[in-house]
Image 1 (tube, rainbow, N blue to C red):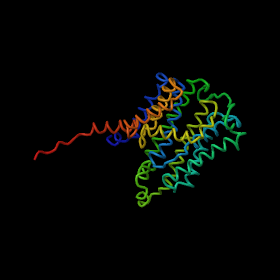
Image 2 (tube, one colour):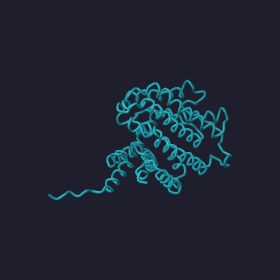
Image 3 (cartoon, helix red, strand yellow):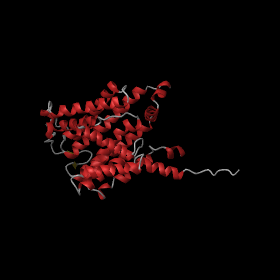
Image 4 (cartoon, one colour):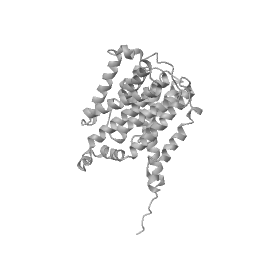
Length: 325
């Protein structure tokens, strides 16, 4: 029982997150709530690489954008159903992350970050010009047919509430899947790889294979998020492949708190709500969002979720009175 209470990836935490986020449309607008769930899956995938494994990547937009485009092309050109198209987009992003990690994971720190950024920008420019006939170039991929599912329930996904419940289902599945990954033997080794890879290697564990697997699973989550964005928008914007998208998800993750289960989700919630509120008052929302972002980072140096958890644990820790001489 004590072990379960100390486990940050417990079922109790998973259900708590779902209970807090599920009624979001009662407080926020339904489109904003749907967007938060999609980017929360993206941030969970990104945090698996950066927060849990210590892999700095500036190119996670590549996997997110691939999920968007492959799902969109499968829906438009192959006329697949929603579920097979999502599966195709998710698997394609996971394979791309696996391939890049296998080639470049031995590079540490900023070198891997630069390689991942170059890969992401390469896909961006491929979609912009050489593959314009397929991707729509600067205009993005349009004319995706109206989406609906008929099994297990009939649902018109062009309606905001239907899109929200559909996205919530996948968010819940992603949350349970991430818990399983972090509680697995591989997941429990990832923080050790992050903190001291040389020691992990000296103990006989395959640190490179662990990093490659972490990146591949991270790519799967990002691809799923991208596919859900395509289903939600009915359109694929070119910006999903841009480095700015990688920077945004990094900011959201840092804001919420890395190395934490709920941190990336909190970061996405705070960031997108700030963007929505400031965007209602001014077109220069980036200026106000940036200022608020800096203020929050100064107030919560471990991220919003990380700092609150740290302060709560500090208050709950009993102090031992000093002995009198």
